[in-house]
Amino acid sequence: MKKLAPLGLLLLLLTGCGTTSTFKQSSPDGPPRPAGYPIPLYDQNTRIPRPVELIGELSIGDTQLTMKGGSQQGVLKTLMATARAKGADAVQIVSMKRPDFQSAHYRVVANLYRYTDTWETVPVSGQEFLAYLQQHQHTLDPIEGIWSDGSADRICIMKNNSKPGRDFVAFTLNPVLPSWKLGYKKMDIARETRPGGYSIRYHRDDFGLSKTSVLLEKNRAFNFLLHTADQSFEVFYIKLVPPLPAH
Image (tube, rainbow, N blue to C red; front, side):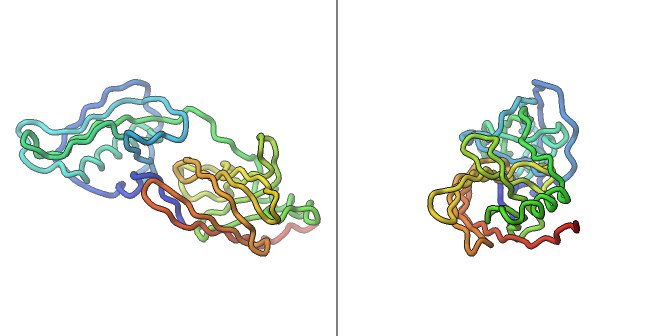
C-alpha cells in the first residue's frame, strides 16, 4: 500500500490552460526533475518536514484580456511543471484566489524549495544484509529481517543504536519512488517493556514523521494506523523469508 503525501500527490495529473506566470528567483535552480516526479504540495499552514531553502516564488494568474480558462487544475499543473523544471523538492502554497468579478482565473502564489539536509542512509546492500541475517541468525531480534507492506517497496530492519533512543533502524531496499534512494532510513525503532512491543518513528513518502507503537504478531507481522492531513489508513507489514547466501 502506498502512503500519500499531504495534498499534492493527488493533483499532479490535473490539467488546464490560459494562465500567465512570473518567477522571482532566490537561489539557483537544481537539476530538473523527470515528468511524474513526486513533489509534495503543502498549504501555507503545514510545516515542511525537512530543512529547505527557497529557490523562488512563482505567481500564476492571468491578463486583463483573458476572459476564461485558468481552472484550478490547470494552475496546479503549471505550478508542478515549473517546480520540476526548477529542480524543486517541495512546494508550498502562499495564497490561492478563486475566480471573482475581477478575474475569471484561479490565481496562486507558491514558494518552491529544495532540501538542504542529508537524509540518513544505511550503506548496506541487499547481499550484505542477507549475510548479516545468516551471521546473526541465532541472536536476531524478532523484528529484524526484510519486510513488505504489500507494495513493490521492501525495507530491511537491523540492530542500530547509533541514535539516542533507537535500538533498530529500517531502511529502504528497493524504493519505488524516485525521491527515495537505496538505504534511506524509513523508521527508527525502539523496544518497549511489553513483550513483542516496539515504538516506531515512521517517515512517510514526503519524509514527514508519524509516531506509533506496534505489537508483533507471531514475530511475522505488525500494523499501525497512519494519520495524514487528508486521511487515516492502516499500514500492514509482513516479514519475508529471504534465501540465505551459501557458506
